[in-house]
Image 1 (spheres, rainbow over the protein chains, first blue to last red):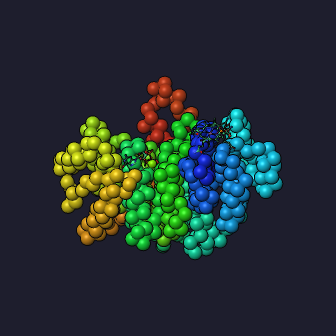
Image 2: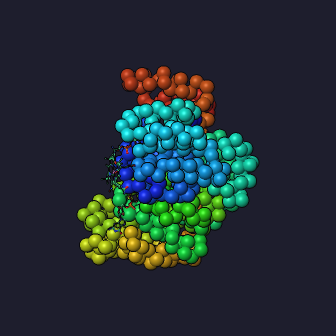
Image 3: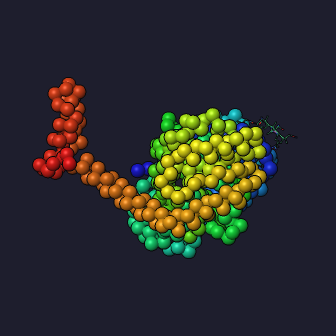
Length: 133
Length: 324
Ligand code: B12
Ligand SMILES: Nc1nc2c(ncn2[C@@H]2O[C@H](COP(=O)(O)OP(=O)(O)OP(=O)(O)O)[C@@H](O)[C@H]2O)c(=O)[nH]1
Ligand SMILES: [Mg+2]
């Protein structure tokens, strides 16, 4: 029996733009995944801890506030500190190309900008986790 | 940490490693081959936690209330496990589990463990393995385990068996619905809560529930209290928690707690045996195939389903009686 893909979708920081996160959460549900949505204003510590307790395969961060260069690395650092750096961190929002490149080099998963068809996100996760449903 | 043996996993679990706990829960939730062994190993550590079920219609404020109840437990120095169940989509099989949104103040408390579960096709308001997940959190050392069901109507009442005390959460506007709720939610509550009592109509609702409960066939010495709360501010939550503790005392002093738990254990053993029997039966060589072949005969009314069942039964059990 294949294990269900579990994804945490979180909005870190003071960013109040939650449409994208909700659109992505719904698309992943419709693709058959289990999505844990934790709502707005999460600290990296809250996100890392929730990811562990929920035993998710991946954490998707939605950031439109410009704070991505601190928030992505911080979540990744905390997961590593807790011995959980096998959990994939990926995400989307308003993130300039140059910043994406830097984050990729730090080990961040795929980042998706405005206008991305949600199917692209679903396909990415299916490819990343072929042994999940 | 994905490559751990079950032995290593259990060792880490025993020293309070939350990731190990999370992974054991996943094994059990997914019905993995390791699940039975893991549960067997943890069994001696279970049975200490007190289980509180929180149920009620969609949007009544269950999650918000669970957060505040957990805070009340923490104030009293107790460790808390929370299992929050949300429905899976019947179309995609996926789910958005959103109960955590209302519980964020608990996320970084190391003595609180929250797990979201999808129903995955179960219809009773809980997920198929909710009880086992509670068992694991029990073994993990939690003093209280709070289970939030999906937003229920009148049929989803599995919580009554899974919890020691069942709290039914209603709102002032539930008045019109209360007549239809009678068959279900009005039967299983041991503590009633009128949440959102900052809104109009709360007192009337309290009275209506009270009247309803007086008419309820009483088979033991507990009259369910009705408490007003405002979950968003925490008002009334201490009283609610005290009523739950009073119910616990009642169960313990009247010996009903152990009676109930024995009943649950009995049901569980029976369920396991039934599952195995079913599995063994259908795994008998030829049974599935023969059943399939007989379907058209039944369809054409040559034989009845009972006769087919008799025939399949004999293939396995010989000539022993089917009807007892
Ligand atoms: C709608 C909107 C708002 C709404 C938000 C409503 C809400 N509840 O979400 C309101 C009016 C409240 C708002 C307020 C503000 N906004 Co505004 N807003 C927008 C706007 C126009 C659209 C955002 C949106 O909802 N898009 C639709 C969704 C579906 O798309 P999306 O979020 O981009 O998501 C897609 C991808 O990014 C990706 N994705 C996103 N998240 C995730 C997560 C994962 C895991 C994955 C895989 C993918 C993914 O997939 C999605 C699907 O394709 C954008 C401009 C723009 N074109 O993006 C500005 C924008 C984001 N806002 C901006 C600003 C500055 C603000 C304010 C600070 C304005 C102010 N001065 O008051 C406030 C701040 C509010 C706050 N508390 O944070 C700036 C941000 C600038 C920056 N980052 O450098 C933008 C870019 C406008 C601009 N060009 O200046 N805003
Ligand atoms: N006015 C008022 N609003 C409340 C109260 N309690 C909860 N709410 C709000 O009611 C909404 C639903 O609350 P939840 O706690 O998510 O309700 P729920 O019963 O868990 O919902 P489901 O899990 O979706 O069935 C939220 O917007 C809460 O803020 C209350 O006492 N008063
Ligand atoms: Mg809820």
